[in-house]
Image 1 (cartoon, rainbow over the protein chains, first blue to last red):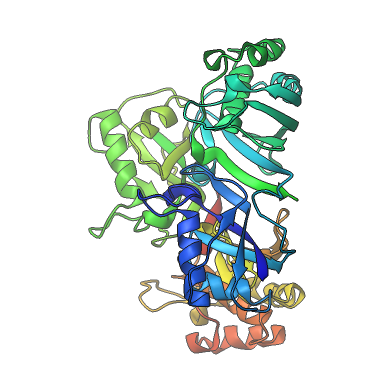
Image 2: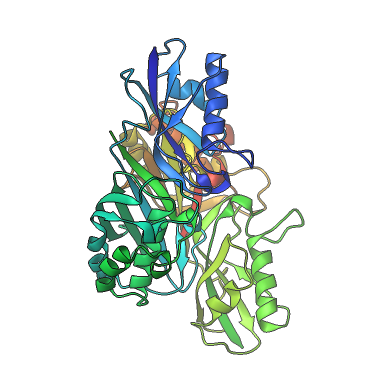
Length: 247
Length: 247
């Protein structure tokens, strides 16, 4: 077997998410189709995680077994030739036969961007949530540290998840101002694994902290309540980007 | 009279350019329509410059005469309520009656972005030209300085311009690598005024220098030839962003 790890980037705006669905173009769907064109046989693709419709990725990992060997530096070019403009393979590498993009994954970092200004910015609007209100970054940072640890995150899980347990380990949550624009807030959440919509609900809760609706000191109580209605709103998909996958 | 200067940002991808045209949505068109909604009377808008279909702007200026006074900090919010997602007013200010966004303009800075990598990046593809070849930045910088000065830029003008003279003064041309991505080259051109497609042809000529097709020392000869066929290709509109307008 020739197991291959694919590192992909995609603009999720016009995609239904990672997983193949009948409702439209998915990342897994267009990648599978492109790989089938390259290898002239059906390829089964395993992704490191699903991402929702509209979520972006600057680094998403998938793995598959190739029926024959193509030099790894040639794989991105071969596959990209069959991909639409909004999905691309950045890199490919041969990996051990026991490796799985999904099960070998040790953690992921997501970035949620909030653009805070009374006026919209069309040039960043595709990749950030627009807030007409200013945010208190210090309060958001004070709140963010409370998310670090292993907790039952039921209060930060949308209905519809199929997980056995809602306990997850969050490794770090940081709140930064983007280097090139003081109005752009970047929330980075690193964890071993996440519940359905968990990062977008954490971002929404930090947004409520930033705009004064929730106090930083209230976060531990919200987590321990396991009550979704106590946390902030689920922020829109477009502000979320999968940035790193760890193995 | 209450003359107003509007500072706008737009994502040009789905626009036919600044100027009103029958062929589709223009920046001037959607702004004029929004202003007419706000003031309930026809407004005549004067832009600092046309931009071509697909060209973006993080700072574009327009001026108009308002029939009545709205506090200047309220104008962006009032107008943005009637604008599509890809166009926004960032700021408005009352100016002297003799001021014209077009005729008072002393200069403009455009940025042309080239993303150099064998593989595409969907998350930057909307705002940069993709080059599968690497570029020699030092050669591009050596070439760039030759564009600074007052010259007949006929070799850098697309057919179809209606100007009386093809002499223009270029104040500076710089070539930089973007802070957050070593593959992203940013060419900034500042000048008093530009010919039709001039910045995109200068960028295309610097791209030919970067990829070894034109020597840096050949630039003065290309300028003095006044021969369009000697310069590089016109790079696509999507890589170009109007960044600053000077008064």
